Length: 251
Ligand SMILES: Nc1ncnc2c1ncn2[C@@H]1O[C@H](COP(=O)(O)OP(=O)(O)OP(=O)(O)O)[C@@H](O)[C@H]1O
Ligand SMILES: [Mg+2]
Image 1 (tube, helix red, strand yellow):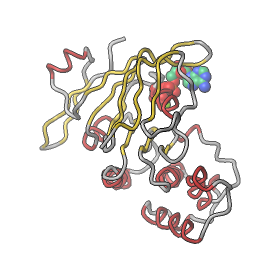
Image 2 (cartoon, helix red, strand yellow):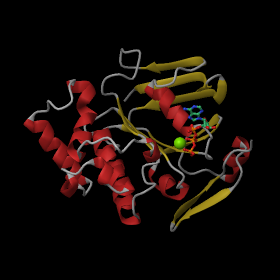
Image 3 (tube, rainbow, N blue to C red):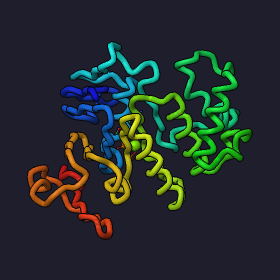
Image 4 (cartoon, rainbow, N blue to C red):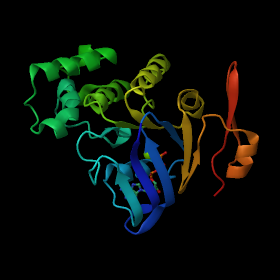
């Protein structure tokens, strides 16, 4: 087990505006981090910083694989769905295969073995019947499953998911988190979600992002910790497991 990526004192944003302030975060193998926070708090921006799509104004992002960036197959990424342009006339299978692009180079030249793998992924997500459709014709939830296949097909060391369950139905949401739990044996996972109740059931640790990042090294937060972290209150109960108390931050 080792460090995958470390953010040190990172400040980042757009066109000079600071969105993330002095963020510190280490992601280790087998981590399962839930990221929560209000709309516009900077969660997607944080993922973009890790992906290298945004260069921080200050601070550093270091990968511990002998490389200086996230290139290669270190990271699998499921973008927030409303940011994907679905007008692109590409089939479901090709979208999944495009997750192998950085490994294999040219789109379209995939081996039979890779195509079989793509179909296996689609089957696992229950959408293999859609394999020849163009992505523009899919529903939001179907699209999310297809993009999840793309994010994991290269067996990344770190899987980052930006609100993966926005469009999926309750039945698949449970299956989906069970799939993530299984994947977590092989890869670290960062998942952004507004569904705090569901993610705290599965994640190992929590980061609250609202310009600052507050890292909670457990999935259960006590009243005492809340006071120490200065979080406002939201109480989540999980039936017969100990309940989790979380808040958004106070600024
Ligand atoms: N490409 C961009 N150019 C300029 N400002 C941006 C850009 N993307 C996001 N922002 C701004 O940065 C802030 C943080 O946005 P971000 O998308 O990181 O929030 P978020 O926490 O992911 O929110 P949500 O929960 O709504 O997804 C917002 O104020 C947003 O307007
Ligand atoms: Mg976002």
